[in-house]
Length: 329
Image 1 (cartoon, rainbow, N blue to C red):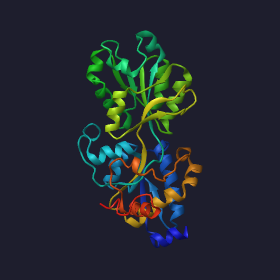
Image 2: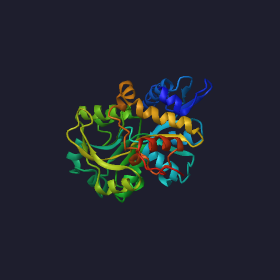
Image 3: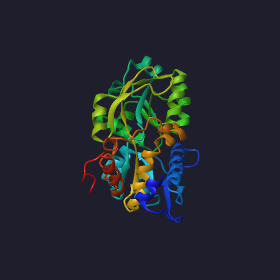
């Protein structure tokens, strides 16, 4: 790390940074603790603490207000927050956000249809379920304040429906914690399940639901994928993600990226960016969520419309991953 110390200058023992996360025991906290540990190892003398009450959706708000200096966030949420998306953030812009690196890991938006619902209605796809005049599905997803419910509203709109229209056709929207959903699916209290495969609680709920045999993973409709792409998600094919998944399906990647407040000193953001690159093997060994992470050339695809922080831009230019002058704003 001598080269890093020379590049960023001496780090005082008084340097303290805070990373946004969720409550103890949550997946975002586990991710944050790994980043904090690796950044402290890369910058002896610095102290990195972990905030609470955040997640992929809330972390952009926390960082924008400088209640934390940096965070992991869903790339789609960072874009929505920076641009002031009406559906996601009520039109309010969070203009203090800056990008560090993206492509940390894919976060696939998934859909599962209950087999009993398919047998009862003959609706074998999300499109059929959401556009049928009768037999609207009971949709189950995470509580408000997360990324997936926002994406679900975007899907409903793309399919020409809404929560109110869905209920008028006999369907419903049920929002509960992920750990409650597998039991709801087993007990036939829900028909269509939307979740994020993100390496955390959503993965566990998806795996348990799939292994229970009550539901099957299905493609997202083309119209929904087009709308989600416009909103900053990346359509793609969800590979074999978990045991119990029968085959690849059409999905959309919410993305995961590192964001920072624009006022964090450039030398510290440079150090953070370099840590994310040079210590990626240590990150992978510390948490499975970082396995397969390769930042080379991937920052742009997951930046999602947020300006690069000058400290990150400097590092990326030095590596030749962006052109000279690129990232200057």
